[in-house]
Image 1 (spheres, rainbow, N blue to C red):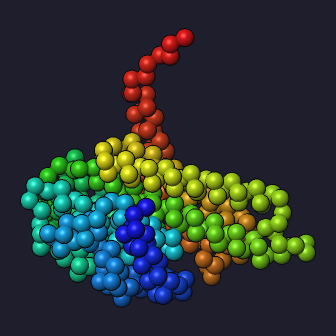
Image 2 (image 1 turned 45 degrees about the vertical axis):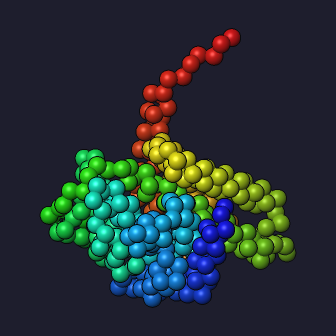
Image 3 (image 1 turned 120 degrees about the vertical axis):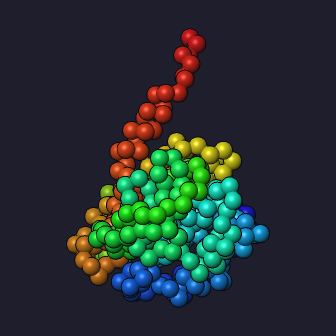
Length: 326
């Protein structure tokens, strides 16, 4: 990891620590905007999170996909609601156009506007309040200048989702693989959230006493949490490698595999976290249930995991594999 990326992560972490405690996250997810607008302004002005993917000549930081994923992951670690995910995707889409809209990109990079992207099913994260909405239609990108957004009630209260119906649209050009970028960003976020859920579970197991001793000392729970640690760290390695590989040579199966591995790791970790916490985990007052809901919400954002697995299986079967020489 470069020094610049490490500094980026630490800066985001510091801001989250000061302004996004669990009670602040709950207040943000229940607000009209669905996120803390003041924190979003700080993230854009002091860190430049919305400018990471935009070239310097267009008012951005000229960063890499890995930088954007790192910032999003740090926010996802604490389930901080922000419009960053949709904004990053909208910027990626606009930059793929033959003649990028400089004015819009500058507004997005500065945090003065937020973005969202509509994929095939019509569901979009943050679409009800986004200023710039991009849609993927039959392999092409279009910018929706007129649309209707209807907020949806979902399991995950930390991430607003809407159904968007397109009206007037302006063509942008061929889709550069926007779903792949979305998959990689969500994978990075999921791994970080899974890691935090495991941290909270380990801490709880050390303090929860049963039969006169901390439950974390029971061998069965020790083994289970060790297995979860390996699962999360393996997923993190897969995602890191996928982002680095995709940056050098875009490939849909790489992104899809990273998303599946990360999503499954998060779902497994969150489920076991609920079990280890016991009955308190399912109460609205406890934070671990929010991780459980985020895990299941994330797994459905780009379509059911089984559909990703089917595509990966098809891709694997279509590859030419030479018979081993005996």
